[in-house]
Image (tube, rainbow, N blue to C red; front, side, top):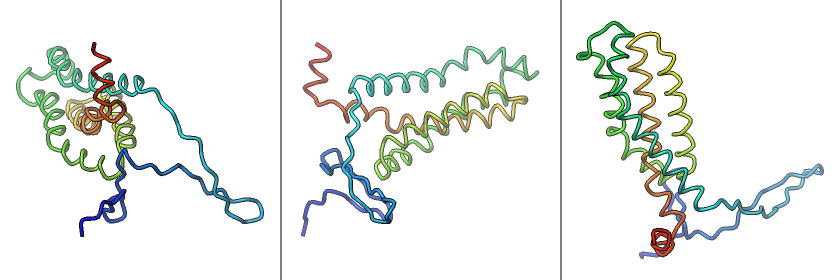
Length: 177
């Protein structure tokens, strides 16, 4: 009744755990129309590169949540508004969006995988940062910060699991000693 499954199906999505040992294969269609199955060489990425990516992405999203506090007086002068009022949504909006969608994005990462969620989060975060830098009005800046918060939530939803994903407890303990 309770048989162990290597993959869990959720609608049209499937989740795969780290212990899935399926070899990556590709189906190549030849010029004669036949399909041939070819084994692909697995991609080997250093565990330390993934750890550095997780640490740096966590750093930039956390820093971005608080660094705006330093620039808030200059931002309020640029848009000719007071330091209290609507300008506070530049800070609050980013953090509220992260808090609102973090668990949902974590579950989405369980379904579709951590890599696409992290890469999408990095792209959305960078686009949001660029939009913030080009914002001509306060409303545009607030909307860009909300968009940037979506990218931050995507990053936060997977970056805490990436080091555990790559290293065993023994490797982590030996790395810190």
